[in-house]
Amino acid sequence: NIYMKAKIITIVGKSNSGKTTLLEKVIALLTDKGYKIGSVKHAHDGFEMDKEGKDSWRHRKAGASATLVITENKIAMVKDDTTSYIEKMQSYLSDMDIILAEGFKKQNLPKIEVFRTKSVHKEPLCMNDENLIAFVTDSDYKPDVPIFGLEDINQIANFIEFNFLKN
Image 1 (cartoon, rainbow, N blue to C red):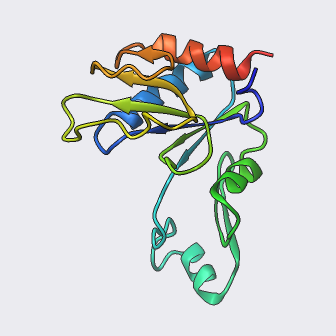
Image 2: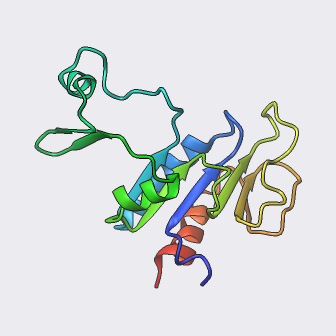
Image 3: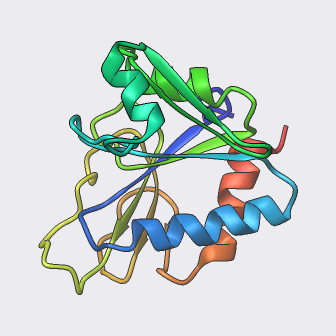
């Protein structure tokens, strides 16, 4: 199966197309089936997770290259890392069964595009992208990949499971 190697799928689409909602539902279904799902959200540089004045922020300000915030059950890391998006995902989420990323439309990764006719955007992003593996829409566009309706969450989760998670 050509998709097995990547183990990263990115969900792309214009803003307000429903990417986050779709991901939430697919993550919940795949998690219920026993899979470990890593999720990644693209953020722009300048985005800071550690709030000004907090200890972790102060450590970073002092020059730490990486700061790990640890509780009994969770970790959060802020770390300088200039590797590619794909290398970051593979490096930090290597213990997951699959990584579902939101955004990253320019990366050379399998893509599921969400396109809604109600959005302000006239046409899909990935009609000619050879990495497009599925299309989720309420439109009449028919790229040459499996097409799902906006509410076909079970079928989308099954598509991901069959093509990426089943050996």
